[in-house]
Length: 183
Image (cartoon, rainbow, N blue to C red):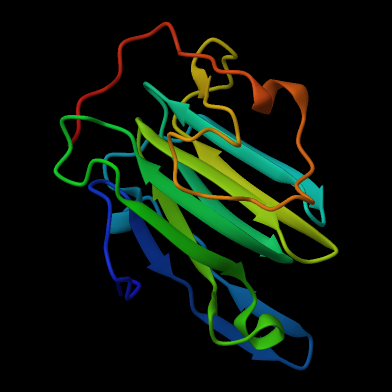
């Protein structure tokens, strides 16, 4: 079921997740190889990032790699920006709160999001801490992960004065490989 958003970005897909709670906790299926959100995907690496309140990781992008993000614990403001000039959704921005809607409210969503090459992506942790699990279509290659400074005027977004970043998120870097075409 698609997530109701006022706009979308070509190639970005959201999968609303279902949760089955019981006395022991809950069960939540994230992704299947035959889900539309994983269409055309290939599994290369599964990673886990633990972050604390006000951490901002932005703006990252890839020329080859697809990402599939799932926030397993905590709450994050996730922002996607289409930076592909040939895309019909060029310069479109999507903001979504990811996390547990029962804990953080109905504006927060339990989702898995697919991020295609060329789409800038970032997040800010709003809870005390958060755990992001993500699948990538390629194994990590520092020459393939592009960056635009987190506070660049390219993206109309302000992460706030309290944003905690690292040096590499303050410097631009363009991947050496050619970008995959939009599909």
